[in-house]
Image (cartoon, rainbow over all chains, first blue to last red; front, side, top):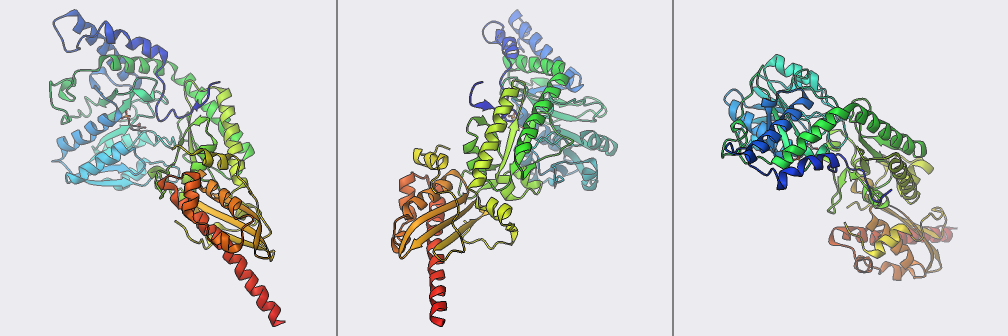
Length: 406
Length: 134
Ligand SMILES: Cc1ncc(COP(=O)(O)O)c(C=O)c1O
């Protein structure tokens, strides 16, 4: 077992060696421009792009003509939201999204607000979930777009996508979902789930960084977008720029593998996640699960530990590459906007750790991680005045008059 | 973030973790900070005459906060109350090479020392009053 152990699969994944293999020819041999129609180099590249487009469509139940290649999810999100807003803005100026979305969606929504749109930010429930009922309550006559992510990247909560999709189709409102964390991990079907626009990204599914895809529905309804990148009119005019052929070939292979192995891989990730959670909870009390116990991603476990502070916790689990729910980069700690939207208290948000498990995680690594977390939390609690006050002295911390807080 | 060797050393081998009897006449206790700010320090001193003979701490906080309070207990031991009161946060910053964003940890440690000394002095004053009242 090599240290440190990578447990941050929601942040990014390693490229699967089989994916790398599929990409290599397109750097030095079949390096043609996929738009070159006059020679074999171009044809070869186009062939690879077509095959990748099929694989990307297949994993989400779409047709290949509905796939637009981008540089990743951030770009796809910008194109989807701004493209819809510009195209349909004359019909209405209202957009619905959620407070738990990725920054790429939230910042794009802010941009739309500056352009004169009104945005409703739904508050998720305490498990980070948004349902069709939440969306229904916010829908208006002038709503043109609903943007709700499929699965949350911090806590792994899976939203009621099908319910929201059905509602949107019934009301004639376009539905975009950021499925960056869902595709390749759980079943996604744009037809059954009534999705109009959907994005995902190569580097979250064992493909390369800097490549992703946007699904744009072609019928019932046919969705049109105003391009956000002007140029040679690639990707049916929706995204100009010479195609990243090696990246796209890698994304296609990543989709093919993920689709073929989805069930076994998800079962494996769930087993590892449960093993980790059970081991930790068997030895520690005051552990909180952030996220939804039922509707959740296979490989994501987000836990908070009472009475210990996040940064010292991360210092203690020094052999684990994990993410924390707070960014303690300045004197004022900032808990994540996702945990905050779920009303997780600042103290618990500060001590949250996201364990991201994936294709190459082993049981041995999970056991090691559990041990290091348990030992660190125990050690820190032994030196925590809060643990002493609550557990040994029975004091309710909310009644304490704290002196000299900074 | 990169930590100095001294911060890591105190974090991995904190000195004087524990508690003294809060109710004892010879013990002064200072609790500073607040959970929602991410730091709470409890520093205790045991005093013989005018001299600090023992010190213990418990800290909820980042590695730099733990190191600052651990260092503070080391430094106050053997000092007189007035000497302990003169320890300033800048000395802690220097000793631990704390970066600017962690200066508040040293301030909190200085506050904790002062709070513990003041608690002890207040206790002694009330005991003296009670005795003179008898
Ligand atoms: C939910 C979600 N949306 C969007 C993104 C951005 O994706 P990309 O890195 O491909 O731009 C990420 C990853 O950081 C994500 O987890």
